[in-house]
Amino acid sequence: MMAILRDQQQRVDRALLAPVPWLLFVWGVAWLVGYLLLWSAWPAGNPWFQIPVLAAGAGFGVLMAASIATSAVMGMRINRGVTGVSDFAGTVYGLSWSVCGFAFFALGSGLAANGASPELLSIYFPSAFGLMAGTLYLAGAALWRDRGQLVLGIVMLAVSSVAPFAGQPGNNLVMALAGGGALLAGAAAMWVRRGRSHA
Amino acid sequence: MPDVDPVILDPVIHAAARLRITATLASIPVGDRIVFPRLQELLDMTAGNLSTHLRKLEDAKYVTVTKSHQGRSPVTYLELSTRGRRAFEDYTDALRALLGEHS
Image 1 (cartoon, each protein chain N blue to C red):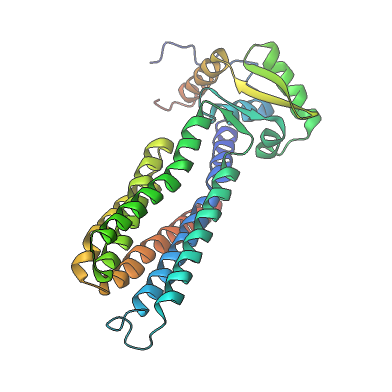
Image 2 (image 1 turned 90 degrees about the vertical axis):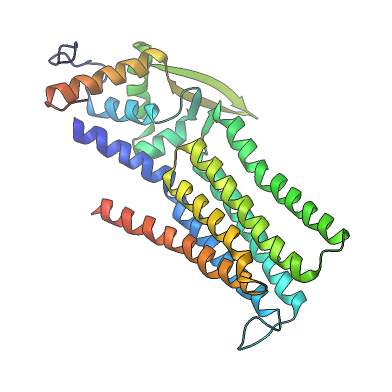
């Protein structure tokens, strides 16, 4: 009976957590490619090739929008069929991403309106969104008692707060490799762990 | 030693299918309800089999069934009652005690 009980609990955990490594993977790719694009848009950035600023910005925007859409769909699928008191927490958390994203964007625009240079803004924006993502992952960790999100949030906060010291445009490279790398490593770790529990 | 008699296992829960159903419902946070098809998916049981066992759990007042409508189609929501959650905890405690595990 104990085996049946544990089996079923593991099965439910797996069903509910299955999309999480995919989420990390999608965000990892978006950060890695997106920030490499931004880094490649600056003359002092990528030593191998340079791409137009507009193309890099557009590519970054598309990657971020696609990741936000993907995580919204995955988030809804995790909790499908379950309603009740947790609806409020889930809705607030989902809205937090757009509301905080807009707030950080508005602050950046305010800095620009007050004379912040493009170089300074290209330090502000990557770190601002990294800090936002890190903070929201911490909230997610608290809401769903999820250690994976806790680790991820701390990594995001650390990378985003250290990146500006690499100077500009090196900060984008730090975000791409350390931030994107951490997300991909998190996804890989979850897949490896799941593979082991299957065996 | 725990104060429960380890030999007495709740007969309502002590059946493989109902133990699995109860364990699944217990994993859903208090105050949340799950729709029948999603529960069926998590358990991989036939609708008829699941209904039969749910009725036994409902008769024991372990499971609360709420029926409502989404547009024209009826929706059945299920949740563990306070009594059911307590019974599940007592059952797992008793099972652990029986197996000589410390809870």
